[in-house]
Image 1 (tube, rainbow, N blue to C red):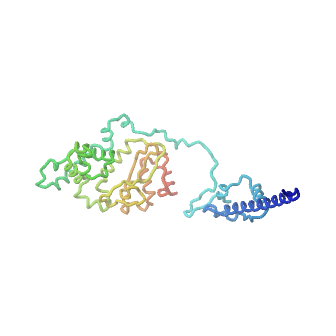
Image 2: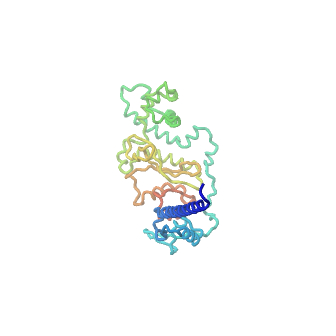
Image 3: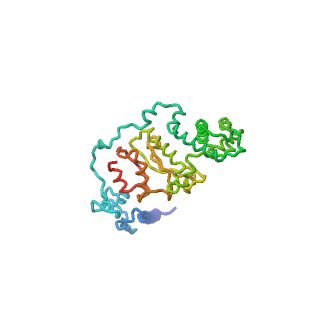
Length: 361
């Protein structure tokens, strides 16, 4: 057992070593803090001159505390906001932008309040039968037009040896049945299957009970929506000629069967399709990749399509108007002047378009 004096010397030596270790730890903490401050994001490059370098000294904590005291309420988020001395700036297109958010608050103008309630129109509101709802969009005029030109194509493809019931002329009821099969394939998620798989009795008897496999195949091959004889003279100016008339009739029904709400959206959708089509597109980041791109205006509350147009690629005639602006103007024609709000992404948006939409129709 040592003397009391030796114990006091040992205790003082241990305390001195602990003080040195504490000083090293404090320096390392300051160094770590400075290294984090040196990391700059892309939005903070404009503020590099405002960052002060702090050297790891014994009084480093005092310097940090002094900086915090000198800048009360400052944070990294506030440093990212760029404050300009001038009130307005002018863009490359000579448009004047304000550098501060408007503080004026007022009531919405009475002209901008849409008082009509979204939903089906009065004549469609009390229809609940599925077949009657279907006929609201695919009218008798559309079905008659399809029957007329499908029979014309059947007469061209039918040979003398084709005398069975599978090769006879069609009628309105059979076209309704054909569309019913196509709708059912979408409901049952069978629209990716071949005709042989659809009519496989071991899988399902739904389609076999409507019409035979040969009849379905023959109608699909002969289905037409326009006069094929005059198509070459018209298709040079409009590649959408084969279905243009039927499409316009269908869109007319979509517009007149529904009252849109106050908020609408305009965007595009790629409908999967791998058949022959002059304006079929390939977009690798889409789920379907191949298909027909449809630009449409929909009600944001119910997702109902009010108006739609196919994207025809180079065949689109815009009369010198930018493509995005052209589609917004064409799609919003049914609601132009009704003070509704239209939301779209930056591909459609431009300053001249916003000014044009504010004008009287």
